[in-house]
Image (cartoon, rainbow, N blue to C red; front, side):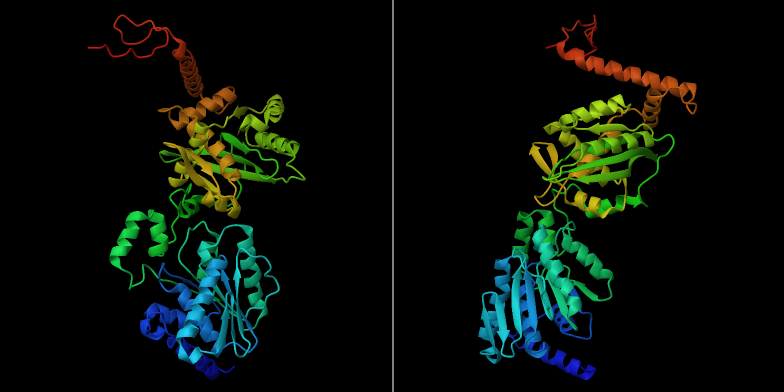
Amino acid sequence: MTAAAERQSVDRAVDLLAGLVLEDGRRWGEAAVPEQWADARAVLDPAGAPYSYLTRARGYSKTTDLAGIVIAAMHEQLPPGSRAYGLASDRDQGRLLTDAIAGFVARTPDLRGAMTVDAYAATTGSGTRLEVLAADVAGSWGLLPAFLIVDELSQWATTSAPRQLWEAVTSAMAKVTGARMVVLTSAGDPAHWSHKILEHARTDPLWRVHEVAGPPPWADPERLAEQKRRLPASVYARLFENVWTASEDRLTSLGDLRACVVLDGPQEPRRGALYRIGLDLGLKSDRTVAAVCHGERVGAETRVVLDRMTVWQGSKARPVDLGEVEAWVLEASRRYGHARLVCDPWQAVGMCQRLRVSGVVVTEYAFSQQSIGRLATTLHTTIRDHHLALYDDDELVDELANVRLRETSPGVLRMDHDPDKHDDRAIALALAVQEIVGTALPGVAFETYMRREIAGRDESRADLTDSQRAAAREQARLERQAERLARIRPRCQHVWSPERLVCLLCGEPAPEPRP
């Protein structure tokens, strides 16, 4: 097709779109605002970018515009007998698209008799056919789409079937000369896989991206205000302001996570660093994950560095080989300065015993409602404050971005995940972070804690001064004393000092005298 012919096809298609009759009796061209005109012209222009990623707020005529655009393309641009496809999150959403097409055909005199429309398909007199495919229905490989429209991509499920539909149909675009695609959706959660596609589109020369901020100009301000009062802030921002925003129950935001990705890859052992290995065991459906971390001083703050993470995936037919995990932990502990292992002992009693015999120091972190809450809170604040250093691992970042915080009881949180997601990497990382961040006693400087740990591990090290060893031994004595008092206080009969200030046996402050 020559350039002049392409321009004529664009003009004819846009004219047809402009003449479609809306539900209120106006023509599309009379009601459309500049943002709608710009998107329609760009999508219908064969000489422009073949792929479009458009985002608009709720109520911004998304499905209606897609229906009008595909009608114009089918009648004025697509070759006879070609195939167009509409992708939707489910059959109900797909039915909205064909209903919108049927409405235009019924209301627009020039289209009456020119198209036949049923529940999930529309066909022109030349045999050009649109079929609506739902993300919850299998069977999409082998299609050859000349024109593809994707409705509300950010609302698709995060399970494997929708991803497979997207990959199957969009990968076929390269097989059809001149094929075009338009994604029109409202903003969603940045952790959703549709956001990765948007990020790619923003930088790829074959994509055009247009994100319209704010609600449609015809929206009622009072009704918007009511929605804002009633909906969670993140939901309102996504639906009515068209802002990609994480849900309130997410462990962290994608922005905070990316701020933590500052390393160029797994880290080699460093002399003088104190390492911890967080281990989360899973045998079949869950995975086994080990995370090696250490703490370091950055200004006045403590930063936790992820040095290495390894994942073992098992199945019902072939569970994770715990012997392989045990050998890895032993080698990693020796390599990373006799790193201490932190794990839930439930599935690892025998492993922990054998590792102790081999010289690995093991801290058992028994999972309970309160202890899991501490893991969730510590990991959340560490990422939020950018006190965690990660290397660029797409699967780790994706998992952390999708972990949710559930309030199991007032003030007690736990990490959770959607049915199609995992949190094994997050748990292993949180175990190591908790051991590094939460072990030092309140008020104890990080340097003192580090010296105490080093001295406790090997007091003969030449790089410690006598005063450092003495300070570490004194700190260890105070910690042992605090632990002893914590054990005896609940059973102490209390012998109060003459001044009735403290108990002479356990040191507990005396109660206030009653008036």
